[in-house]
Length: 444
Image 1 (spheres, rainbow, N blue to C red):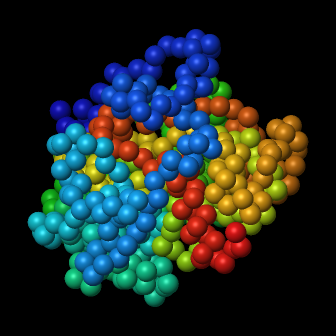
Image 2 (image 1 turned 30 degrees about the horizontal axis):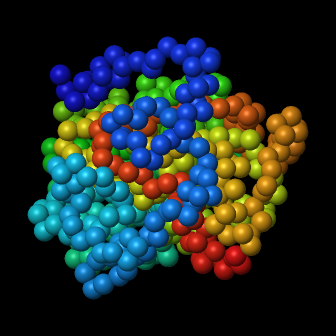
């Protein structure tokens, strides 16, 4: 049995407990105890909005740069130990620990597609800090976002930047040669466009081209595909617990091109591996709403929500709940999953479930001078007004999701990385706000 087949059997044989409506509500409103041992926590949990007292307990995480590599300091204390030892010692680790340059990794080439993207650029930085040789692709090397990659530590000796077209199958055959790991992040992230196939073709055909090239190259042992919870969750079903066994079956390519592209790109990846080379290890990361500091010069789609809140472009929020996660956690988890050498299949990657009003309240606590929304638009009004200002894609999603409460289970990920500690969404919102206010000169 191959690893991928074993994963499918594991998922199909796993089950979510049969819960009555009362039990579901109890589970959804469960309180998250920060002192509770990870091994005894319920796999599915609602992480509520932090209280004011908890806000003040957040660690002050700073980044200092020396000549070798960035060292993260927690409350002024230098943590210089190697995080690769944590799992053996049973200690809790996170994406904010110092990364140790390992010369042994110089022998491993990792290909990262769409390297200038929000998530991919963080992956590239972390790979370089670990000592990997990185082969990074972008649509154009002559851009400000490409320049930011070249400024990373160890980029001079360990980073090679290539221009590549997702729709050109031939170029990927050359790019994967010599690479042991391929991390496929490249995919359009637009919620609306005039021609839906501007999103669909690069996502689906591009994934097929990259995965097929990996299957045909014996050098490649593992592929990590960046997907999304958009491939897991369709129209919200109130009270439902979603896990890796779920697929979004509600998306129409003409109405929801982005959602459709994520679903079909992931499915085509599994299909190509099953048909061409079952021994290739395929890992899929399904992040939620990804926020955090960015190396890009623009504002990406998910961070746009916070940008709108802090600039007054969103006077009221909508009553919408989703899973949130920091971009640094997403990048770190991509790497830890392939470094394990034994994981495969889908992994939902979120820190917790929050409404947009929760996020707005966090912003207000971080920067009282800002005026993020204090209230959510009543759902019956939102369903009338929002179609006038949103895209077809967003309108349909909001119509089926407003006011509903769901859960996304990150239980499979935490069972495979039991000592991993996500950054709190409060910390992530704080760092996102700081990044945006500094980058775009927004007055706090």
